Length: 192
Image (cartoon, rainbow, N blue to C red; front, side, top):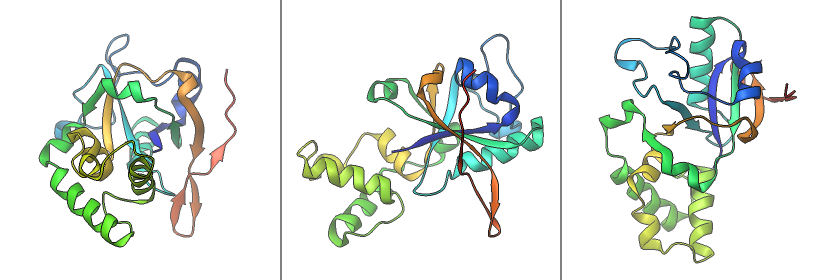
């Protein structure tokens, strides 16, 4: 799976040097959202899954950050290691639902038809079915994963306690208008 963080290019140089830092690092930095959408996990960074060819929520977060804080929208593509998920925190907005039932329905559909569905998009489906084929997961284990996995597959937003170190940033993508929508093609990463 691919992961990303959307923000404004005002922070690009800092992020490439120090990594993606929580809001509470040296004081509490201004957030993008207010009210019920404001991030309450001040010691964590918020990430999202990159669904197939689109940064999904990272693009929305980048546009909102640029509008509120200035600069241009930018998306940082991040590589996570399995141990990183020990720092997993639920995005507060995800408490609205338990995604396991939706994931199970999508898993059954994908297994039966071979097609993708919500919660079983290309990358998720390939990862889960590949793990089954390699004997890393049984079908029963894949159908009933930990709550956090179903949440990532269906909802795509989460937080990690602590920072994302700069060496985990694999690409920086700037917004470019493309056919009425926005694409985020990779731009050169100059570490600084």
